[in-house]
Image (cartoon, rainbow, N blue to C red; front, side, top):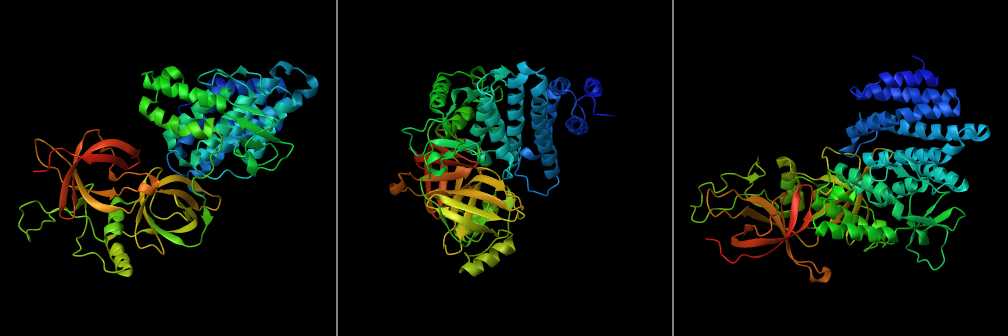
Length: 535
């Protein structure tokens, strides 16, 4: 069927159903490309795009689900899905631009100029967003196209005018400037450090809060850490002090947004539900508050700079996200169930060497050297993978590798050791991103203190005692003003819960007081001594 005439396309849209997402997406992609090539009358072209917009958005989102859950390696099977989604967004942006150019002389769409600019900006911005969603580096030219769209709206002096947009969940309207700011906010939100759920909320909230941000060319009395963007460049926002003073430089101001975020957080404390604040039906109060608090500084305040400066280094690190391998790397031996009090030695006190239900071979003693340790780890299937160290700071590392066999995820606990380090440290995966040639880069935030392996189990007042599981202890660090902490298996934290800890022959009981950090597979908790000693 021909997709080159608007009448044929409108007839087709009446018969399309979203049940077969892949087929519908392919048809819409072919239709959009055909109209772009055929260049029909601008008003008819726009009519088709607006009629297809709901279905286009739905199928694009459904296709994106295929690669949104985990970082997507270039060249993988689902990478072609990303290419198809990005191509459709790009063709839509170019279609709206072509309609505007084609109508410049006819003037039949004079009252639709703002709509064309807003739709174009939204589609161009979604190209960038899809790379965020796939955790791939944004290719050259994508940011330039977004900036070009906003520059065109500026030149026409229509950037601040709102038009109806049913896809905007809160306002049901949007200006070209708000569409542009929404993309900038997504970029500021550390998108490569977010999982699928968090990024979905961030994209929704960027639309919600965009009206509270402003863009200007007033740089008087501005500090160097204020955010700015160069419309002639090919990147998102950055500290103005690091950007060249070009004719296209504009300043981003989120101070009014900071007030809005503080207001929302205050309403959370009063028990107001996120849905009533325009944050979405799928957002819980606690999770929403944590995420919004993490966005307060990048969205509402100036760039803070790095707490610890990074320096380029050469070398490598051994890294693993396997819970049992982390323990082996720290202690030099496989985690064993502590001997029960009163149990007779030699009666297989290691009756179950358990960590999250896994069973592993027993070793009699810690490995005596690093080489022995490596050989034993390989024998047990607990070896670390090698990563290239790109740079480091007191707070962490930036590393990369060609993807290995182990799959990492955001906020996952990892153990790592530098080549010249004698101790394995604990870290948290803070972001993941694939670059164009397939290398995976990761940011690892170090947890403070030298870890020790401990055995932990919940204290039960009645019923059968539970088996111990592997945990980790971190000492207090007065210099960094951090307290002693426990790293427990995921979802263990309950305020007031009592935990029994075995560290060698020592045993103690503690009460959990605060959740310091919740990761993908662990809880970092503060604690205090329990009032009742273990029996």
